[in-house]
Length: 233
Ligand SMILES: [Mg+2]
Image 1 (tube, protein in one colour):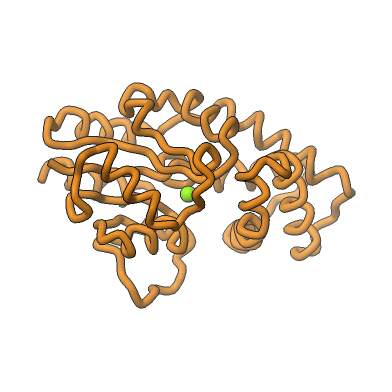
Image 2 (cartoon, rainbow, N blue to C red):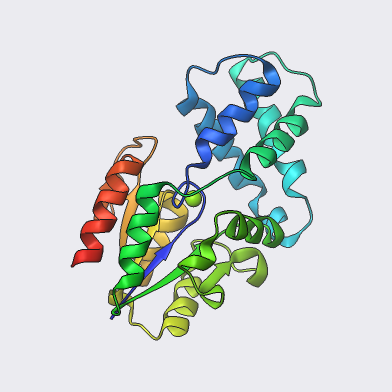
């Protein structure tokens, strides 16, 4: 028996595309260096995660501020209100988000395997993350009781207690579990600390850290390929 645990954002679906698209729409410009845009935007995310999880600030406020900070640092032309408008456009784009056909195939393959249990571990504000669960139709593959949103339990990633909660829920031992995530510091260090296996989706091609995941991939295609291989094992 084994358990495969997925992060949501930039793991089950590609959020980066939506974030950049929303900014381009609001500012009316083409953002050529999208990697740098995402790097700054995500750096700003870590600053606000605690306030977001505790409900002190809303996702809209946080995202609006992150957008404006990113616009400012990159020297893009913007007005103060553009950040929140971009946050709204991003939400609107999110309401049409879907899993890729390849990701659906990979999840189907895991569900078809009686020796595999699936779970989700996602960080963020409760309402916002559960909305994504519904939008993406994750009920088709994941039991709702095996979906953990950090905003519901006030334990932040990469706290190893999150892994212990999942081990208990799935009745599995650490070395029977796999974490699939895009954020090295949040998803992969947590898994390494817990003694889990991991697949790191290194979308931005960041330099290799000292402690290595079992598998590292750079793109969605590579990810779903590795997942399908794993499902067959
Ligand atoms: Mg993520």
